Length: 114
Length: 111
Image 1 (cartoon, chains in turn blue, cyan):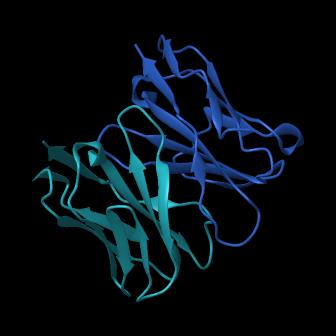
Image 2 (image 1 turned 30 degrees about the vertical axis):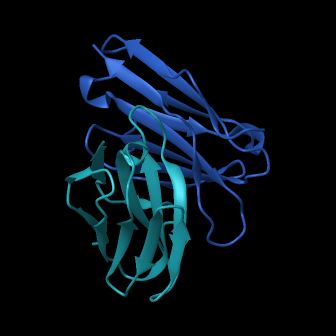
């Protein structure tokens, strides 16, 4: 396992369409995070899983966004009825469930809504 | 409200010209402060974690320090390959386990 893997790397979609992104964390990591990053800004927290349980969601995560982590392994982030404001880089990160340790990021999925 | 502020927003250096990046934080209780490097179109790459005031960490040309209000990332004799955006982030003693990031400093090192 070489790190956090995200798929696809790039996605272009028309406004109003639904999109789904996948994240495969580092295999022994129990914690998984989703962030969103727009140009010139730092990543903003969206949601956090410990194993299969979604323990926290940001106010940024509107009801059009849903995330799952079945069986505590890979995770998916779905955006329904996409809007142009959803265009951003979506980053996934994982970390071990042992105290305060660093999170390791994937390469991200760049979403463009046209 | 918990805040992380980085300065400057952008920095241009000549190769070999040392400098420092600043990360100031206002949080209810600091658990850890993290530095990441991000290249264009890629995810952040972990550099350092600092936990308590006075702590220092070094890696090649980079050295991170922490006080009760801010952290510095010192870059000694930078090379063009050090050009990237450097992100600072914090985690809190209570509440959210996720990272709260600053907006980053875009560093360009010219040969």
